[in-house]
Amino acid sequence: MPAQRRAAFAEESAEVEVLYANLEKLKSLSKKIQGSMSRLEVSGRTVQDAIGPVYGNTQRLQVMNTNVDRVLEAIERAREPLDMTKREERILRNRTNQALRDLKASNLRSNQQAISELTNLLSVGTQSLEDVFRDLCRRDSQPIEPLGYIMKSSEFPRLVQQKTAQLRTIHSQIYNYTSQINPNELAPSAKIYAHERGQYIALSLGNLAQASLSTARKVGGADAIYKQGSNGIGTYASGIQGMYTAEYDNICLIFSRDEWGQVLSATCHPSLAVFASTLRDLDTHIKANLITDCYLAYEIIELVTNTSVSLEDRTGELKQGMSDALKAVRETAKSSLSTLLSDVRSKIQQMQSLPTDGAAVPITSEVLRRLQIMTSYLPPITSIMRSLGDGGWSAPNNASSNSSIPILKSFDVGADGKQLFSHYSSDTIETLLSNLEQRAKSLLRGKSVQGVFVANNAAVVERMIRSSELQPLLGHSAKLESWKKKASQLYTDAWKETSVHLLDVQYTSKQPRPPSVGQGVDSAAVLRSLSSKDKDGIKEKFKSFNVSFDELVAKHKSFKMEPEVRRQLGRDVQTFIEPLYSRFWERYHEVDKGKGKYAKYDKSQLSSILASLS
Image: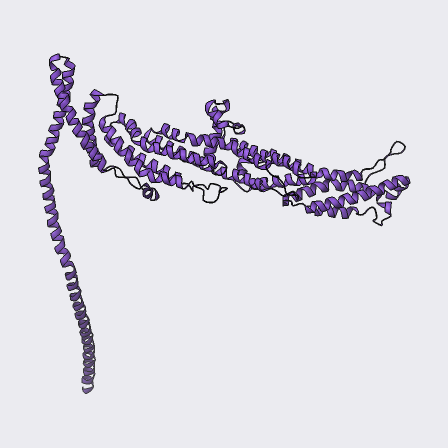
């Protein structure tokens, strides 16, 4: 029994221990819950402190919004009589105009007094409307700075909708009256608009016009070539396009459709006159620096033409005005093509000396650089080439002659512009090389140096074509190949004199002709068949050849050749001399019994020397 009680007691004691443990856990959990509740209460107070003012502000804003709505309603109610007045005024004007038309249509003498009084009344009212119209236009016609809009690629400012609606209403009233008096003229309100907005555009674009002139001045010396995009004419053209487009949008909202073109032309006339004057000043600058700044003329043609096309697509107007403004620059651009060719001729003819080592002259690179630069202006250049016709650039003063008496080729509007440019480039290269050849014949002594000189310049031309945008335009030039062959012929002519010493005479009337080269040639047998006089002649030929050959080799190495020229001329000489010498040496090399006194070089030695020339 005691044992059973102890066991039961132990079991109950264990259960009590478990209960105590659970109680401790419950106390710990209660403390944590109490801490969380405290933190939650603090957070709640913080949120309440933060949201309380916002909620209060929201309530006040709601009240304010309700008050604003009520004020707006009150304003609308107050404006109703004013709107009624405008409606009544419009009805009165329409009835007055109708009454005047009816009185005039009646053609009664008794109505003349009434017509006169009614006309004066309408005239006074119209004059007042014109003053109001002028004031409304002038308020929003303060000059702006277009450069900011251009740099940000932003739309130019337009009149606000409320303003255009007011101007449209006033103009319609003025137009209804004035159209009865002068139906073929612009309404006074249209003239006022053109004057006020025209001044606004002209004054706004004034800085761009000045910038175009100031950026045209030479800063890198008289010989500095114009760099594409360095003049402000591009920004000027962008400003014109942006402002004219914005003004066209305003006009469309104010005037009737049949007035759009006339009003736009009248509005843009002052600024277009300034633009034309600016282009004339630029044209004067270009003419004074035509060789270096003709590229500015090409750039102006491209920019103005693109602007004109864009404006015509958008407005249907201003094409003729833009074309007239561009005319002087376009004629100068036409004349530049022949002037550049004449400049090549004159510069070469003015050369007092040429490099004695046959090196290429700087004008070759200069001329090719011009053609390379021209590839950046292909659209405007090809357009003026079409107007000149194929080859029209060759005649002096072609611009003036073409402007007055067009030639048949100038009507070929379907001509391939790139092909025309290719022809012009070929003519330029032909002019360059032909004049250099003529000058070389006058200033350089010896065909060999003349040939090297022509070959070097042709090589520079070919290299600059291949390394630029000229390559796809010119491709393989047959004219250039002919110049390379001509240069090679000039150079090898000097070696022909040396080759004469390698020629001999063989008599075959009494015996079969012996072999000239190959295994069948026995030099000793050939020499035994010769007389002493003939042997002496062979010795003299060897001696003369050696002297001439050594001199030409030394001269060849002294020439300054482009790498491709040295390779080509070296191969040409080797192809020409080596077979002749091999034949002559195989037949007569035993003339000095191998001592080398006369036959200075054997075949392999000569071949090695000739190979080194490349």
